[in-house]
Length: 209
Image (tube, rainbow, N blue to C red; front, side):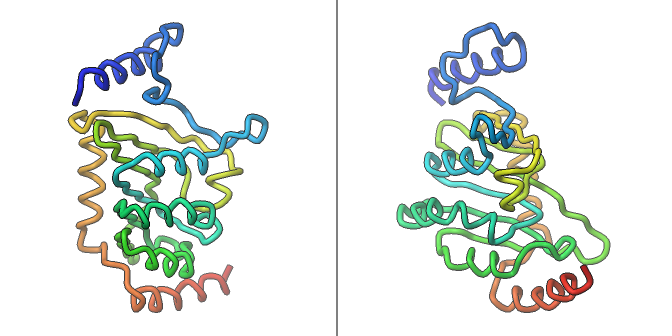
């Protein structure tokens, strides 16, 4: 990692966690809280779009994905497909909430690997993390937002954006945890057959709701 990037991260951490009166020379490296705010126009969706447009690869781990949440990112994801930017998305059958049609849409992107964590009756899965590799730095968003429309644009949500080198302890821990879940025996490659099997449970849950 070049000295300029290291210096920017140091200054941003000092500003964010030690003294906000200390100037942060490059706001792009500043850790910050992201909330959906109609008055300022800030939305987590816009931040994720921005980070996707500047990454060399990405990884998401989210419990729930809905079609309405995915729609806002489709244009950006299509641009990444054309640029052959690779991504990994890990989601789950937890509470049978993720929408089958959103899963089907994700399968259309050949540059994105999707795995489906099958929770069964004994496991819970409620992660919400977004990782963007920018080469010299890793940007990480962790908080309360799943990949749903309201969580990305309207709901009162708290999400923290952090910037780290790849050697940072927190970044390493998050990457290791993602890879552990990705390679977990309960995590399977998403296929049309997996979606069809899951769809039956999803429909039954919707009827009961």
